[in-house]
Amino acid sequence: MPEVHILGAGMVGISTAVWLQRAGFSVTVIDRIGPAGGASYGNAGVLAAGSIIPITTPALPKNAIGMLLNKTSPLFIRWPYLPKMIPFLANYLSHCTEKHVEHYARSMVPLLSDTLLQHRELASGTDAESFICGHPYAFGYHTIEAFNGDLKWWDLRAQLGIRFDVIDGKDYGVIDPLFPDQFEKVVLCHDHGRIADPGLYIKTLANHFVQQGGKLEIKQVSRLVKTNDGMGYAIDGRVITPECLVVSTGAWSRDLVSTAGLKVPFETERGYHIELVSPSKEPVNSMMVASGKFVITPLTGRIRAAGIVEFGGLELPENAEPIELLKSQVRALLPDVTFERIDPWLGHRPAPADSLPLIGQLPNTNNCWLGFGHQHVGLTGGAKTGRIISELIQGRPADIDMTPFNPARFH
Ligand SMILES: Cc1cc2nc3c(=O)[nH]c(=O)nc-3n(C[C@H](O)[C@H](O)[C@H](O)COP(=O)(O)OP(=O)(O)OC[C@H]3O[C@@H](n4cnc5c(N)ncnc54)[C@H](O)[C@@H]3O)c2cc1C
Image (cartoon, rainbow, N blue to C red; front, side):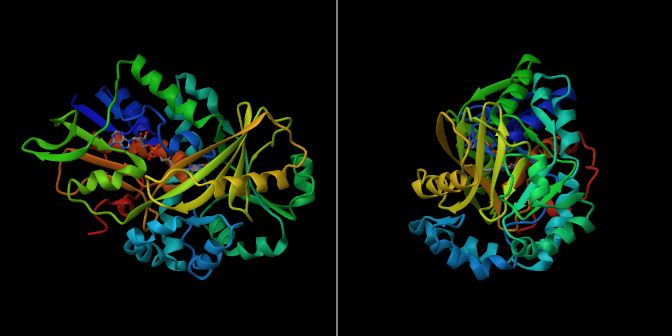
């Protein structure tokens, strides 16, 4: 069996590693921080099978400037970074059409809809199984008007087989007493779930991988390098060319694959969470608070509120404004919950301009595969993506249409 090296130990990289190891490959994973060192650590933990509407809806261009100027809106930009991202922004906004939303939704359903099953199969026989909980995912609307504004996206979801019920907010208060009257309408999505601690889940899968003989190296890869033996990578001042190479470095992938000549219109959508540690009460289900576009999730020993899209690249430190916004929104929503302290976090979602991940072979190579760009749904789709990459490396076609995810589509 060939030796495979995987760059990046997030959700995608670790899933790929586990599936390849099960298939008998000798696998090495390299990460500059360690398992769950990126976005996979701090996401909202939702297995969001029905989250098939991208950020780039037709409403975005109309509302973006107003949102950026409004400090209570979930869209932020670090203005000095704007000139660097103008070409990306033009490309990104060109996808704000109904046609693209529908294309995106149809393409993503096969990658996301069986997420619970995919995670259960990935974690099967490991200690990570205990982190997976099947439960509905709620979307809370403060007003009927806000719900009506999203109605066409719920219709699209229904057409594509996503199962949900629309209920009155008061009835949801019976299901979850933490929300007695905050919402007028709640959409309750079935066949969803959550990971009780996303960072620990991935670390547990990585421990299993190492216990089974996999190698994990904590090192920074500086670039990809084309060699006579195929695509390699530079690390510690030398070049290594494994028989198979997988690039799953999340938001850091654009710069890495550009060293191999692949230009991808891609940015990071910076996201934030705050955690209420040791809360006095917890929600029953994960809840998307539609007005603020943030998610509240009960995790082990804490409530995590996660959301915000901030454009500002990979290098700038965290910004106090989105953290303060999340704090004030959570205080307003959960006035009766007391807790020990609040811990904030900044993470980097990997976002191609068309919001579709890149999954498949690096063009013009025969030993290098890519798996990155899952933006807001990489925990949900990462388990299946890893499995698909492992199948492709074994020469077996994926059981879903991979055309939308073709890494060569931008050329
Ligand atoms: C606030 C927030 C909330 C979210 N909520 C959800 C949610 O509820 N559900 C959901 O499905 N998704 C959610 N997401 C999105 C999800 O977290 C990401 O899509 C997913 O984690 C991406 O996984 P990944 O493996 O591609 O990348 P990452 O998890 O970012 O992993 C990439 C890894 O590559 C390593 N790396 C990078 N460069 C190098 C290098 N040069 N050398 C070596 N190693 C390198 C990094 O250290 C990192 O560990 C959320 C994201 C955020 C920010």
